[in-house]
Image (tube, rainbow, N blue to C red):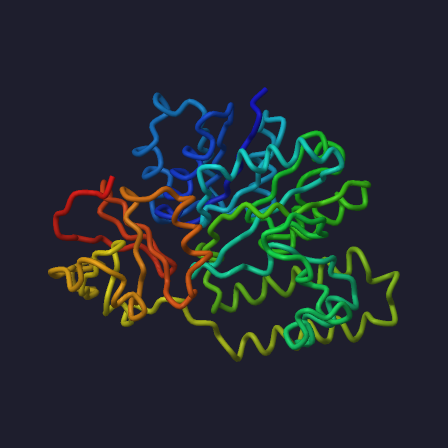
Length: 392
């Protein structure tokens, strides 16, 4: 039996998936771990891309399941769970990056807490700031009402209105929590055998809240471990699409009706009305991608090497880098559109540590020299940088 089974469901994010797996190999380097990837009928050649980079002969601990239909998040994870053999199960999003010590930190934490049900981590946004969904409270009718009406956003640290995000504990301190994000959720296999996997009636959102709640109901405690990971969040979905809005708010309604509708009839009308109103507002206010293509002009930093760059859509999403503008010092970094880390120079742990301590005013990108790819929040781009020796 492996120590750990890592389950990843992917849909049209082959470069993010490649990056995620690279970080997984480094984090699981000294472990007996298996990785199971379920591809949800991607149209970007994800399966072929993955098999080219990670052939079965060299990666016997990697299993790729190519579905011919989009099974949704919960159903696809349950399919992977049927094949998993590990003592611990990690549900992991493909748009995440682990550090070299993430998995060791989490396994050590799990072994120190015998009452642990599910374990979440300190997730960082693509600018290095803290992702509040790393620690969430149980969305009871009152908590849900505060969330969808905006009271949580107005009073984020209030114990009355701000309980959706558990903000009272410092971000670098472990603590009990109610809800663990499905982007990184580690659970003992024995617990999943007891409470079951994801509820497949949810298609894309809400499955993690439902599973976390059922684990709590079974008498276990969910925890937050402050070891950091990067989560781009939503790269496999178009968050400005009506499809996203529909699935997200349908999931909120379904969870509420499944667990609280009968016991809280007095609040039912108000909560459901608030959720529907929030869905309508989302339809009116479409979210735009975080990095627009026309914004990809300015200064790009390779850790002390600053280049003028320009996005060339006519040449197939290539970023052309000119002669370095700066060679030493930190001048210019405040104006950088993307702060790019060359992965030849730094470990993921070092990069995420710098992200945490940054001013969070610029996007973060990872440059992979063998691929000639810059992977960042807005997508991935072919990069042709000037020749230089790596720092290491």
